[in-house]
Amino acid sequence: MRRKIPSLQALACLEAAARHESYTRAAQELALTQGAVSRQINALEAFVGVALFRRTRHGVALTERGREYAAHVAPRLQALEQDTLDVMSTQGSGGNIHLAAVPTFATRWLIPRLSGLRALYPEITVHIETRTRAFMFAETPFDAALYAGSAEQLNNWAGTRAVWLLAEDVVPVCHPKFLAGRATLTPGQLADLPLLQQSTRPAAWRQWFEASGVSAPLAMSGPRYELFSMTAAAAAHGLGLALVPRLLVQAELACGELVLACEQSVGGGRAYYLVTPERAEERPVMKTFVQWLVKMAAESS
Image (cartoon, rainbow, N blue to C red; front, side):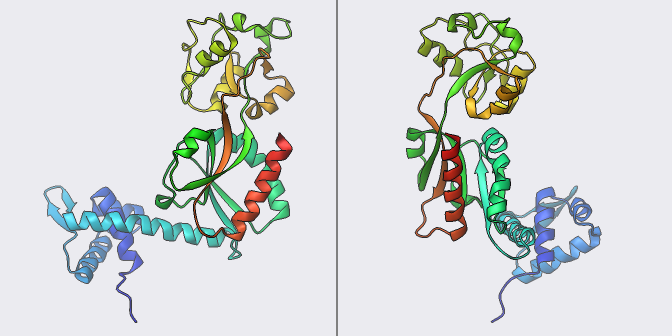
């Protein structure tokens, strides 16, 4: 039975022309002539029996039906492209995992261990994109997410299940110059030094000082950085003290770029989890990946 599906070329022209609301810019993006894009759109309109664009003084504009159709077509074209890239990346052998991850944990902890995964399971390919907040799995191509947060936050992430990986141990670190030859500083001494803030955790220093029983009026002042990797880099360059998870700065601590400013650490109930959507069946490749990841986390504890 012949399917009612237009040509991919016509759909690609629709998606580009809808995004730019311009046949000319769509043609430039697709390496076609403006006339070729216009003919593809005309053929598509004839195929569906609906006007998708209307002429304006400045070019073209989407009709209401055209806007609706283009909004449905765009994610499906993107999914087709992703499926094709998946096949190309593994020469058709399968084993792809699409992973969302908090960026610094992915960069500092996961990626350095992926060579071990490849050595054991060369047929598995892990694609990683950054996400810092909960999302709806049904609206994304992700198979799983590496998430940093509390158990309470996970309970609010509907339609998912989680595997606990590592507890978070947050410590203050700094450039060695701040110690001035001392082994470490007291929490009270830290309160008088420049503090680097994490924009994703704006109250972190205040909570740390409160847990230490120290009054720190300037606990929430100082430059803010979005990623822990930025905060750690700023601390390593002597811009101030950073409050970061210990496991994310192990390399800097080992080589002496950073040192512990104080022995006081704060757990705070946060941890790293692998979150997956609640599905009846788990793909074999995901089962293998989860088992490997849990083993790596146990060895890091």
